[in-house]
Amino acid sequence: MKLYYDKDADPTALCGRRIAIIGYGSQGFGQANNLRDSGCDVIIGLRSEGRTRAKAERAGFRVLPIAEAAAQAEIVMMLVPDEVAPEVYERWVAGHLRAGACLGFSHGFAIHYGFIKPPSDVGVFMVAPKGPGHLVRREYTRGAGVPCLLAVHQDPTGDVRRTALAYAVAIGGGRAGIIETTFREETETDLFGEQAVLCGGLTSLIKAGFETLVEAGYTPELAYFECLHEMKLIVDLLYEGGISGMRYSISNTAQYGDMTRGPIVINDETKRRMRGILAEIQSGAFAREWMREHRQGRPRFQQLERETREHLIEKVGANLREMMAWLRRERLVDEAEN
Ligand code: NAD
Ligand code: MG
Picture 1 (cartoon, rainbow, N blue to C red):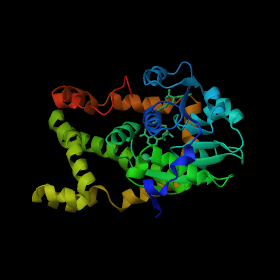
Picture 2 (picture 1 turned 45 degrees about the horizontal axis):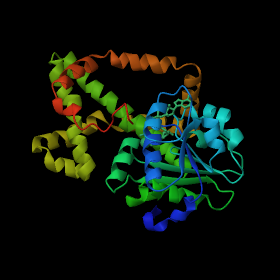
Picture 3 (picture 1 turned 90 degrees about the vertical axis):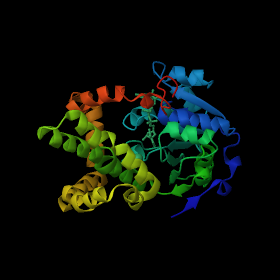
């Protein structure tokens, strides 16, 4: 594994090169503010009707229409949602990229699956922080950083890796560690993680546990605490000390149940299905399905979202969270500002 830190980068690689950040959502906010504080020349490209425009202006950035921002910059960082990146690129960016310019991403999706095909005289890199933009910002302001992945897809000038490394360092990644990878590896592992484990696997596990208890006649509020609320405590322990570290802190009874019952819930059949999910990611079938769904106005996306919002676990949870005052203090996300 190739790992880089601040000392490995050439900070002058960004000197005199204007950076256009396209999109001011989670990553756009974090990266733009860190770049500016690192002394970079940053402008923001947004749609005129976009809701994030006021936030970028309040933060003191020069905000331009996307096409103008792209035309004025040597480095264009695409930080809009992955499924809209191809249309944004076609309409407002493609025609304004100069030869020798760089196009950057924080996720490999659009490039790896070929939804965006930049001309061969444009450099293409990825700097992907392994955390949401709000954390990227908070850690930077504390003098630290979030680890980043770095990849180069196209290097017509021979200078793109140096640029990408300087970019990763300027957003704080070099304080934590920058790992070199490829667009393919980043994209496929990222999609697999969020589908099978982090988001998909986890929410389905929580719902199945909650439903099992409620269907057996237990109080929904208790089922919520046991299957959702306490997840955070366990995840914090895993985050700090891995599986063994977590087991050190739980009771012996919990640990025995963990070790003997966990493999009954998640078993060889689950792994067989995980391999099926991975195969659909590798073949591009998932990516094509999602882009088709997006183009058709997302009917399935909206229906599934609505179904969960109406699920008992969400109603019970909203009421219980009202009882927990500390949840409203010290929030990482303030929707008005970031
Ligand atoms: P986001 O949804 O938070 O922000 C999107 C921005 O794009 C907003 O400014 C929004 O106004 C704008 N936008 C939305 N639709 C648009 C459209 N149709 N046309 C033009 N602009 C539009 O996005 P994000 O989560 O910051 O993701 C940006 C990139 O960063 C993605 O490639 C994502 O995969 C990657 N990434 C995100 C995270 C994360 O935790 N959020 C982590 C690592 C990488
Ligand atoms: Mg991810």
